[in-house]
Each structure stands twice: as structure tokens, then as C-alpha cells.
Length: 53
Image (cartoon, rainbow, N blue to C red; front, side, top):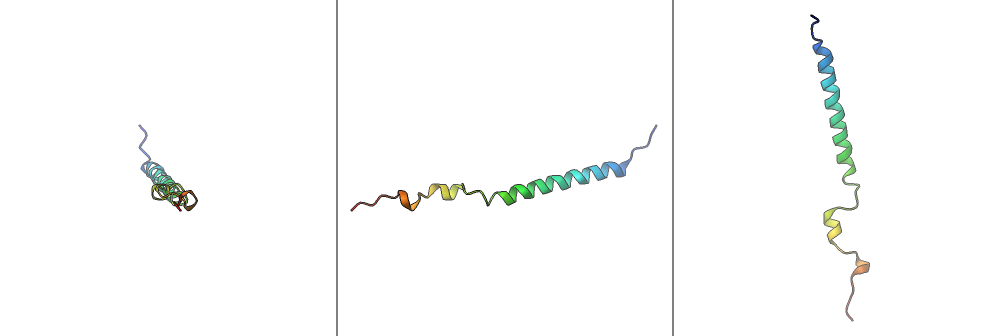
């Protein structure tokens, strides 16, 4: 029976963790760049505000 290669398994786990962490950082970095935030979407632009004379 062949013995398990634990170092290979550990390397694969570490690579998976690193890829997941990088993906999470990319998603977080892209979030502030999104102009459609809930706080800004609730405020009407100044051009749409109608004033009564």
C-alpha cells in the first residue's frame, strides 16, 4: 500500500486558501467603486428636486 503524501495535500489546501483570500480581497476592493450604494440611491439628485415659487 502506498503511503499518503501529506505535504502535497497541505500544499493544495494552502493554495486553495490563498486563492479564496485573493478572491475575497478583489470583491472587497470592487465594492466601494460601485456607485449604486443604498445610501446614495435614497437621496434624489438636485436636478430632480422641484421648488414651489
